[in-house]
Length: 486
Ligand SMILES: *Cc1c(COP(=O)(O)O)cnc(C)c1O
Figure 1 (cartoon, protein in one colour):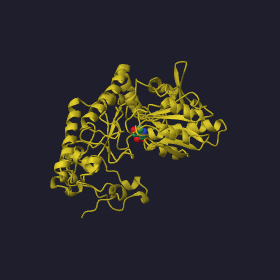
Figure 2: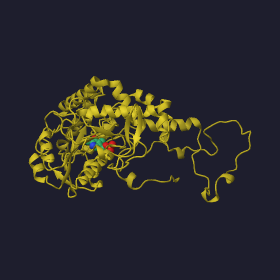
Figure 3: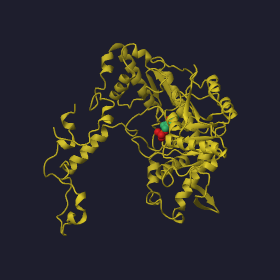
Figure 4: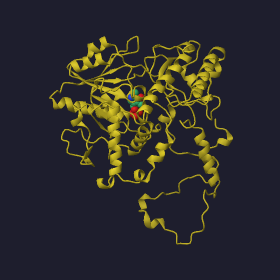
């Protein structure tokens, strides 16, 4: 139920009230009939709220306060890397020379923007250890698909038409099997062993001359580093398959290890995670793909090149898989990532990785006495708890996630990965202070105690939010397209 002072904007409307004050018109009013062809006009005026300017401002300010965002509170959403978005990134992305250019401008007039993209590519090549890179893909999943299309083109160029299978461990991110399917492959799942890592015996039993690639999420979705990568590379390359690295969460390994050095043929990065682009709500992302030189001829075109100190887009790439995004990716996100890399420097990026891993391990060890920890070795940037113990007392992980809202926290990712019962996937990130980590740990411990002493308060949470528990899927299945007065 909504409280009175939190009425819908349609409920506070007063006929004739307007949200602006302007001097009276001293020129003839335009007749809309002259401008719009008849068939395009509304039959009745739109039913819009009529409110004062102050009321509308307060309405939106109040709405914004009900939302969880990284600028308003701790947001430990595992796998999503909800870290601080430095405000200098925003300032640079708004430089008129970046914000006001048009993608169809002549190359000679946008050399600065092209230089930034070229330099960003060089940095990402260095960070990943790959040979070449494209900035075109608009998100992580888009990068996965782009890389698989390149791998397919590579195999076909060798007359290798029988490679129909992509191997995906069950601890991979959910987008991996989805991208493989969209790229036209059959997905083969390999199991996780008791240590939470890819089971090598199972891998050996599924590879063959029909293997196109192995997609490895590393660290995997349990937050664990895959220790047997060299062996995996041998197994997959041994049958002629390609190795794909899901590097969305590079803040776990950046400046410490490079996918290129581990023998990977392709990797995607999420600039809207590790490299501080704001994300969520479907906003623009960037999922560049780096490749080993064997795959470079198949990169999406155009390819950004530098010839005699002039930047240009090269279209004459006969083996390219074609274009995967209009223009050259989401430029604004690339400006932010470039600003971040330049402002951090190599030592800063190394500290990012160290702190991301330290914070996750600190939190994991503090919470270990209160929740089940299915995999007990050190984690990387995130860890997964199980709510098994609490479930035996009648409280589900969903209830605990709702209870966290009462403490002002966005809950972690829950019920993922699928192989952990009542899972909670927590990613503190490197940008949070020890005080923030401790406060969240205290909230989790209090909830664990409530489960034992007063489970009902958790089962009926949240208690402090504007709306209580909602039907999780109804809004998506039955969207309200038009407000009608009751
Ligand atoms: C977030 C994520 C993806 C998908 O990235 P999107 O930009 O959401 O498409 C893929 N893999 C991993 C490991 C991720 O964390």
